[in-house]
Amino acid sequence: MTEVRRALVTGAARGIGLAIAERLAEEGWQVVATDRDVTPLAGVVRAGITPAPLDVTDRPAVAALLDGMDTIDLAVCNAGISGRIGPPGTLPPGAFAEVLRVNLLGVFITAQEAARRMMAGSAIVTVASRSHLSSANAVHYGMSKGAVVALTRAMASAWRWRGISVNAVSPGLTDTDILRSLGDDHVARMASLEPGGAPLDPAVMAGAVAWLASPEGRHVRGQNLLVDDGKSIGMTPW
Image (tube, rainbow, N blue to C red; front, side, top):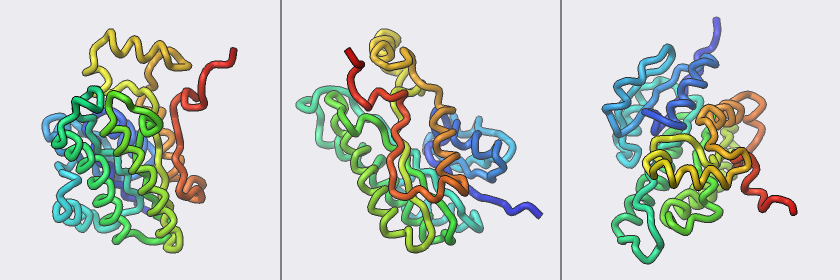
């Protein structure tokens, strides 16, 4: 009898989260796909995927959902928000705090509650961002993702002794609703600076997460995998 593998994917109503949930389901995982935005989540009806409304900053709700899953072999902490875009001097304190609350505290709550219920051989994958390297017009977003990378390394160090692997994936420019909301002209300018000249497909990120969740990938611990066509390496040779 084939062993049932159960995964939780947060922020899975669309974009990278949805692509991850679909990829895992294709590989035989039973996936609980969550999002606080219930309207698009209601349309996530796929074989092997169960949609469930969830605010990742609500610890009792996260705990209750995980208790209802029976077992948890993989947690993908993807839920996040971009917040208000603009120079640091224009950023209200409330906007800064909200991004930090969702993007960092939400990841911590989800990972911590999942780890409490995991056995050896389980995995946690956080979704950070290339913007943790530089984000002049979204300082709160980039900072929160940098904190996710640091948190990932800390959790990996602590939980490796329990046989739980913890890693991060940092997407580069990716074709998501958040990106498209910036407008066609802005997206075109950003894409022109990418090595491939276009945003990456969310399925590329899903492939990275799926590998880290695989038996081979679980031997990787505390790493941040930058998936950005190599833009983060530096400037083009001249």
